[in-house]
Length: 616
Image (cartoon, rainbow, N blue to C red; front, side, top):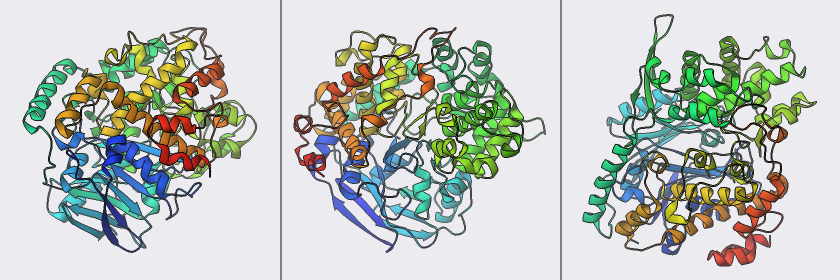
């Protein structure tokens, strides 16, 4: 099939061997690639309820068709596995420069099997696959690791995915880094990598996949690159949305107990963020938007903090979520978390949860190691250090927030804000009801990336997909459709493996994606047909959840989400009619009342071969 090499590389770390397997062209046409292809592999090859940190789990890295040409935003890659927090389906994604190199090496995906008896890293150079000793780099942080591997291999062009010390220790909210530039942060894929004694995957390739219309594909890539750059020009990256989202009532405030935080949002959002941290854009490969921020800030002790600046999610969870308007402290903890390789969303959530449990009398100062306070940098530094290292109070979170809540007891489970043991990211579903359905039904747990209805509140919608306007964010009758539609579009980005900011910031349309697909593969798909590939991927992911014992009982909202604000952008609002919204969503997915995909639904999506999983 044009646009694909149609090869999956399997690497068995137990036997230290590798092999390639052909991908059926039918699967690529049905699923495109990326997260959907990974879900198919996971569903077919990993048994239900497998321990995510056991050798029986598999770790899959995949790309789509976007990497066949230099299309804007094609530096994205997906990682798919069973996650240590939810014990079920997980996909996460990062950017950087690794994905195009994997494609040029000749592969659509890599599947990691087994477990090495010692620390190793994988080096892929076109058809050459080596499993190399990683003893000397074991213990290095995510930035040091990438540099050390480039030096050892003698080639600065090589791109590396790696884990930090947190992943090595199998901390359940550890991330995977692309040379310290970008992170697959949520859900704990870094812990799965660590459980296999796999420190890194380095890749280089120079093959050219055959495409249908290279000349027009390249012309379109250049045209879109210029247009998207012009649209996004002058933006301040994701910190740009800190102030407007807080005004809408969408940001987390005081671990989801607060209503408004206007002055604080101005202190940590743009334009102050850009000026205070001396920001310059840090674009990924083939990126016209440049949402990542490089910062350089002299600290009070005379040292200079330089590297990746905090994104919006980090500003929300370590900033507004803790009532902390000290940008320096947020940047410092963000850097420590990135280098250790942990998810800053869960980190901020755990800190806020700890403070609230203390205030509720469920934890003592002795248990915590200090008297924790809101809006306090010492609390932030102390608890972040303990949680990142899993020492002292940090050990409470070795099974995620549900494990901590169970250990603390009392009303702690009612304080926690999570779905399926994955903490809420920095968007409040009381501000966008479609987000409540999205969080509850996302196959990997509460997620703003596997569906981003919060963007509808900022005006994002899809006219070329039949949407006349953004859904009313407070209309319960539109909530199910809102979640359905924005999940489908987000799933598309993760199947073709393209950064969503090409759409959100740059203004790329689904119709333009269809044109890119045509020039690459020679296959004409309507926008509806493109989004049908997304529905297939979501359904396969849901089947994995179902086989792991999940159903409607797990598609829930935490108690705080039914408490309306008194002031601010969501005053008086909460998704009280959540059950009806959820039922509306299930009908659109063609799932039954218990949230189980139906045989009829599978047939309608050309997924008849998976009906057998409903009969297990």
